[in-house]
Image (cartoon, rainbow, N blue to C red; front, side):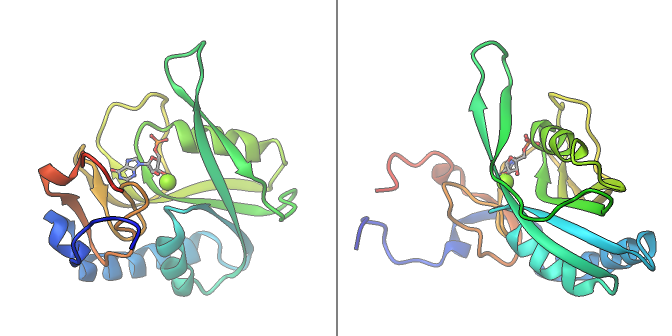
Length: 192
Ligand code: IMP
Ligand code: MG
């Protein structure tokens, strides 16, 4: 084994569940209905921002009855020496040609707004017919940039959350619920 972590269930590391599995399932049905209505009779290009949106997108698209094309982008934030904020860039380009398509960008969480503001700016340059955004979680925080998503699953308080695709150091993405880690695990001395 590469590290010295004791064998344990990652669910035991959760201090507080903010959104349980049943609530996610029923909200996804409502969101699917909203998206089906918004795009009725059209074909949609769904772009998932990975890794965080993997589980949300996998479940949400199975609630859709409109025709979709699916692609993924990977985004990385670099510290920009000239600006106090991080500048996210797409590091793995999409394969779909977005010109003339109805595009829906999906991310796990909207926090500072930097990621979605930058990604929508980049995709807008590809001349889609329309461009909207969808997030599972909207954190009530002070945004670095003014940005609101078109479809939102849950509005949550300003706490660092994991589960259902969201990670801490690439861990906990597999949890079926969304929760806050026990305080002593939020900054572990070493992950080995
Ligand atoms: P933004 O660019 O600050 O809006 O943040 C978007 C990205 O930050 C998300 O795609 C997540 O990867 C990450 N993020 C923000 N808040 C959290 C959190 O509470 N848990 C896990 N990841 C988060
Ligand atoms: Mg992410």
